[in-house]
Image (tube, rainbow, N blue to C red):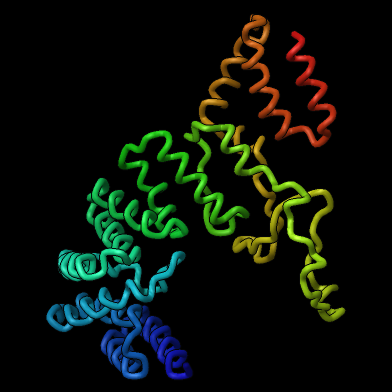
Length: 316
């Protein structure tokens, strides 16, 4: 383990040498770090990119191939590229090698979701969006908890048409896997099943929550309790690090009303109602309910006042 850590640290130092324009020294440091940890796909990828930039394509090919062979076993459900690996699929040489390696791996290990995910990633880099979507869907079919594959499916919807049930399934799975929104930010703009959206976002009943007495209590030190940020009263959400402010900020948890308020159909209905407030007929009471439900849940903290407004709208 110590050799792995030293290898990563040396590769990060090599990144700084490369940024300073000391290319030969950086390449030598990458090669030395591989002597400590030969199975690091990220170091192979960085070295391949640098060798390719220097015109040493034959040497780069070897490291490209090794990096692509190692990727499926070192990618998790939430992989994130380290600095220097973002260009792992840039250029015809890299894409050609990746195409051959991933295709061979898909034939050898067809039930490995990471292989199909990487094939989709490659297809997306090449601009072959329909094929990329097929590969991403195969990845989530093999592993329904593959968070990043669901994220890719949502992002690629701007290039490839997806039916309403398919779009809804993506959003609901993202909410299931990341309910606090710490890693993903699904869009509710095109959700068609608003009832299912409310059900997904509605908190579980109190009797369905785990009993805290069933867990062993861990008493933290007093100074830890004092330094811990306090949760705002009567608010649900999570503390999240704000890179702009340089401190933790409280992020509100999305509520069913706010989610529905972000829906495109509901916003269009609100605009329609706002344009003709004096000409509402009795048969438009359902539209009034939609407006009150979205604005009431988002704007009213007093639930009783909201219920009173809703009942008055129904009587009208």
